[in-house]
Length: 77
Image (cartoon, rainbow, N blue to C red):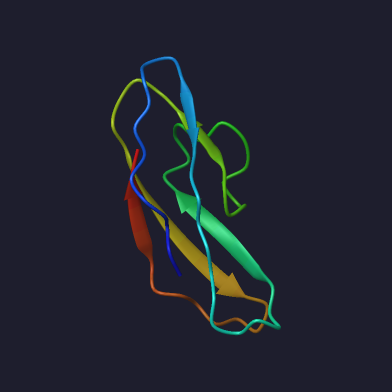
């Protein structure tokens, strides 16, 4: 699992996070980004839009349809 590269954006703008999960290519994954603060759309997708007026570390966890939990990763936005 990979939360993607750190992203920079200006106050009032937004940016897109780029999470990925791998391992079992036949599995689908559920993504969970925390904290939910600053996430502008859906915190349960791989690539949500974020915005805000402070720097935030977002943590990504992915769960496969088989119930396997990936090691959490983080990204600074």
